Length: 85
Picture 1: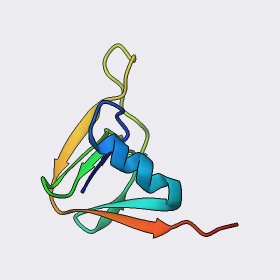
Picture 2: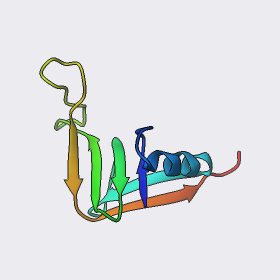
Picture 3: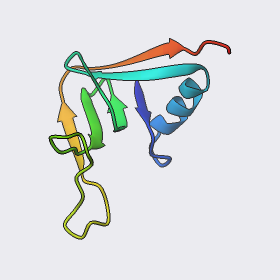
Picture 4: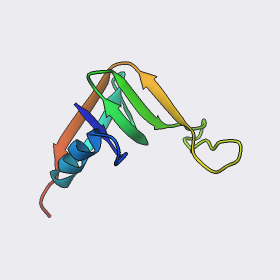
């Protein structure tokens, strides 16, 4: 499965449908990770915002945008049904 926050990515439609009724967790090499942009289980990668040692976003030299990093490995998307409150 592929999901994405990028509206121009075909995974966005899957994300939009899933998030309506589910919470989504992303696991990379069996550890939960945050700040993902695009996740592809079949291709085994995660595109996410780069973070410093404290978990804060890393900006480009002009400080106009957050840097991104692509990680390859064991990727899993977990969905959890939202409880009706």
